[in-house]
Image (cartoon, rainbow, N blue to C red):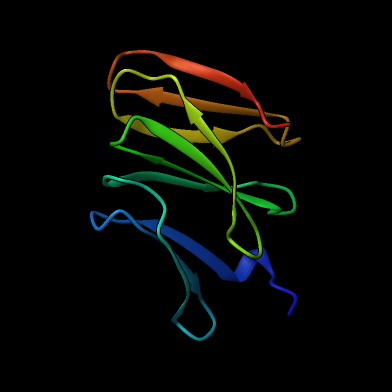
Length: 109
């Protein structure tokens, strides 16, 4: 099945999951058991959506394959809750910001 990113929306939740929604049908396609605490931020890779980022109150961010939703990488290093995640337009850099008043840049490779 080919998934078009423009018809998908990802949400984070207090139940530690990330849900991927199909906007045309208004249905949840996948529930990803993403973290050990509240999921505070989600972001698709902006150009072709080959991966999804999640950030959470468990002090980590994770990279997930799209489609398939398998974990590709855990980004651990913050001493506080991860409050935001983003990815560069070319998909090579990932930025995370934390409640510990730091931000980190990660290579997506």
